[in-house]
Image (tube, rainbow, N blue to C red; front, top):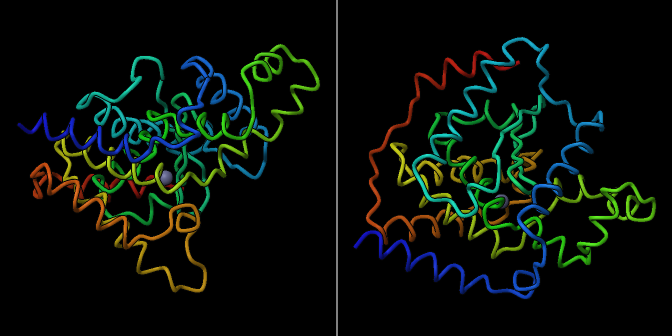
Length: 266
Ligand SMILES: [Zn+2]
């Protein structure tokens, strides 16, 4: 029964998202990986993105912790295209309250948002949301919508200059992308549903938006709010989805572990 409900909810959310850009996504799954890799190289070449480096203190412990949370989400669920994408979470050392994903398995999380969160379940909520953007291929949907074609991608990868130029901004484009409202809803819904299949409390994906809502009127509202508006609607939407499947509201938070983890952050 639960399974049926989940399938039903998914088909509902897909119906709701059958937008033009989605139906025009001619990129293959391999193209998603190439787009993600291309964007990753561009982000790393840009000094504005201060990636946590292997030479930084506690690098391995931080990256391992974050990726363990990611693995737990992946193991517990049947995420679309899970085999095609090699999910990896990379850490950017900056006090920005944000996380983002590009395509093909590339997910990025700032130390700022990790410090802001209270427990591991909340981090899982943020990562599940970003994984959902990748799994539902929102990045390449948007690229397709913007007229980046497969041949441009193929040419650029061969180093042909015009095509390279066409792709020059892609790293930022994908990193800065504001997904459509449908995409955001789908990422919220899938993220919460996937979390409900782990030992984490899936309602913690809401808790994050509740925390961020309080900062809305702060002098410097967090960057996450600019790409993820309307926390109020999103809290309500996640509530609806989780209630529909009778999701548990007493899952694990791992507060103590998370407190220890935060001490490792630069
Ligand atoms: Zn999002």
